[in-house]
Length: 115
Image 1 (cartoon, one colour):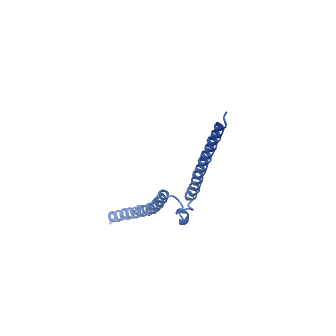
Image 2: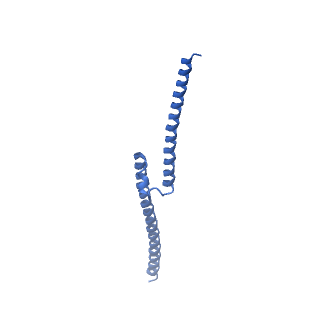
Image 3: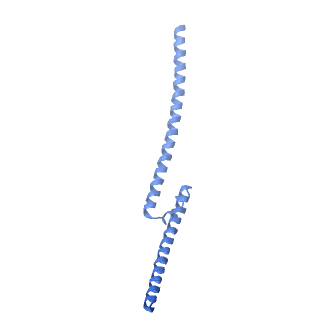
């Protein structure tokens, strides 16, 4: 092997190594970002993220929008659940009033028949 070939091979190996190290750094950065997102999502799942808006601002804009929409949906769900409970209570009360009215009507009919 000629000295020039040897130098060329060493140069190519150095370039390959440099390229691989660069790729490793890029992938490590991507992994770090994914791990950060994972921690945020874990916090969000357990309700801690929305109570810390400063953490939310560290997320990518698309994720911030999703969390904002999620908060609105959760609020709407809570409102609807309260409404369902109100309607259940009103239905129960109406049934009770109907029963009372029916008892009074029957008593009135019986009293009318006795007269």
